[in-house]
Image 1 (tube, rainbow, N blue to C red):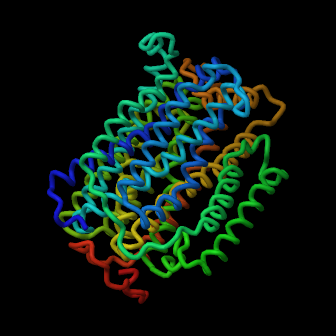
Image 2 (image 1 turned 120 degrees about the vertical axis):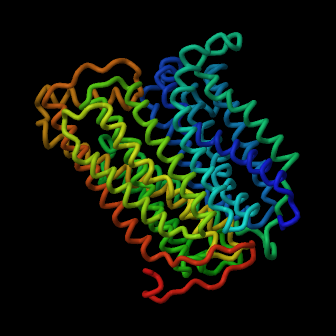
Length: 529
């Protein structure tokens, strides 16, 4: 399919796909620093969390659907469609509230939440298609170093996102006449997205899928979305208002599980299911997705709770707390690029997965033992170690899966890998957030002033305020130190389980072509070799 493409055509296609992916990943971080100004303009403080939740729910739920579509239609067609949906959502987000309340759409904040969901519908395709297109362009033996660029793209966007969001929000007003600075956070996607679209339309081959084409099972797709949306919503609910046993949380979980059971039953009987369940018979697919699920939780745990520690223990501003994540991103970029290059050169991927897991465990051990007197610089070093450990996980687990399955399943298998990583992150964030809340409450009786200060500090940091935080009281610092230590100990358990799952991934020789692979070995002695 791609054997006759020149290296230049492949690299230009890769550039367009990575640029589109950069926009999708940037949009998950660039909005955070703009939220306080958005809330002030649109008067929607009670709904500010849904600006991020809407994007997450839509982008997670649609991942498996995009994977299936990529196995049925031209990859270029799917990529172009995803970019157009994403750019449409971006333009609409920038216009949210400009014309006041609108029929059916509500006020400006409700409009923004809805349009963020539209962005997420496109963002899911940009994420899934990056790995799928790379799989089409390069055989597994070469693919590692190019998939390493995907990890680098995520790392760079997570560094630039908060900075660019704050810069446009604070200094962008007036760059376009009559346009508030925070709206440029969304409009900036348009020129970059059009550039990516030009690359795709002019340089990317059609990349037709392998295998016979069958009609899409729309019922299967609807059941999958009907199961995933309430499940992710239940995980994202504020557990202080809607606890794990509240009627709303239980209702969402129950509805989601019922729809997913119906999806499985339908998939077993369908001639063309959204996700072919026979993929789970493959030991590489099964074990790698378990590991990705657990490591996705570990990554989000560091992203969420390290800034809380910085604000409520070290006593820095929310801006400096956000900057403290830059070493994590740099570590992810370095670890991802190094692992990809080494795998492409020497042909072994499992050893780099295991080594990355051990480095990540070491970094988390440092984070879990931080005293309340730890310095800002020491925390930067600890998150850098975690980033180096996380770096190999993003490209290599996907590479192992793609190398082990038939090319006609590339879209489904690849999107499933990204889906399990995102679901793992959402579940871990919800569960570990509950552990944090309970631990703080245990340390600070509800009647004390310190408890009120702790809640206020956590709320201020969650809102993304850039103001300099007041020095936390000793009681608050001690409570957050103990609570976040527990969170990172639990995160270490997740990583250890993911590392053990990695042991059971059979390492197959990396194919030098995109031909179908040989069956994976299933004997225990070979699986743990």
